[in-house]
Image (tube, rainbow, N blue to C red; front, side, top):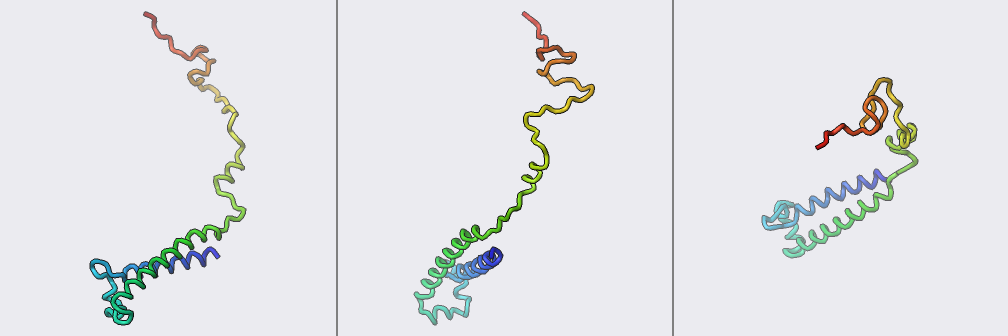
Amino acid sequence: MFSFMVVLIALIAAVLILVILMQSGQGQGLSGIASGGATRQVLGTRQAPDMLEKATWTLAAVFISLCVITNFFIDTGEQESVIQQRAQDTPSQQGQTPPSQGGAAPLPGQGGGQGGGSGQSGGGGN
């Protein structure tokens, strides 16, 4: 159903583009090119722009509505993202201290080792 909705949205978008291009603007658009201006002869001089404007508004409303409705047809299923799967596979590292490395010096502020317990360098007095 989702694929059908996407195809329908694409078709409406294509028709909407054509209807917008057929509207006469300041440069007369494509309305004079389409059928050699037959739309104005058949529908009258004022009825063609009104019909194209109504078609534009209708197609735009249908397009936006279908875009919103399509969100409800997305198949979420029970699949998890790769990030969620990897988070479940690896044990939680929070709260655990990293394993001590053999001859590595402790980081400043951790105490122990050769640097003394305070982690502060011996600054000179006045």
